[in-house]
Length: 230
Image 1 (cartoon, rainbow, N blue to C red):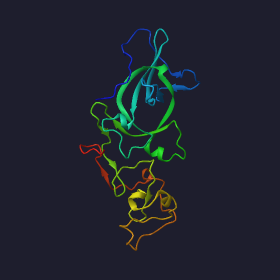
Image 2 (spheres, one colour; image 1 turned 60 degrees about the horizontal axis):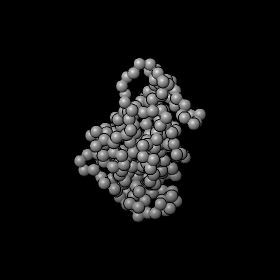
Image 3 (tube, rainbow, N blue to C red; image 1 turned 90 degrees about the vertical axis):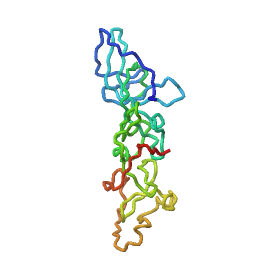
Image 4 (cartoon, rainbow, N blue to C red; image 1 turned 180 degrees about the horizontal axis):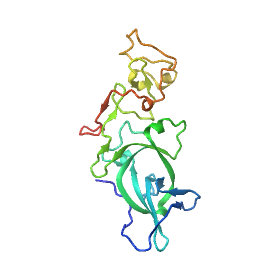
């Protein structure tokens, strides 16, 4: 079942006009069409909803409403949160809604997955999106994604990984018998399958910044198919 959010009727009334921007109540922050915002949930015990502003309009009584396209958190999707989902990961859904602009609590930034992995410091307002999500069916686009390591899992930017200088695959330290502290001290790494290859050329800059920045992708899997990971 698709997630429901408190909505406002979208019936067209006379006197409506489109607005270029809206100033968030109690702040000097201005939001415009295309901006991503945090919106107050009906359940105060939940984190704020994240949405992209599609339209801003005012009625004859100067009540401002926004048409939004919701982002879903992994735990809000039909498949639930999985091991490879990062803490700041969102899915851009096909769920649109109209809300009172007064429910906007603040602004945020939803980065592309690649750009997010390049951030030196991740702030509270930083999120990322690498999948679009169909709320009714639970389907994802893309439905296939690159996998890494012996465990053949997609990349989670919250997890440290090390790159083999031979095969160029990426590995979780725990999957190759290392602690995170040991992995951080490495200057070079060669996996067990490549360690017997005398022709491996080691360089001083053997590591890319992350799997997301590495263009070499040879493995991928349909992680959103019938055999869902729990």
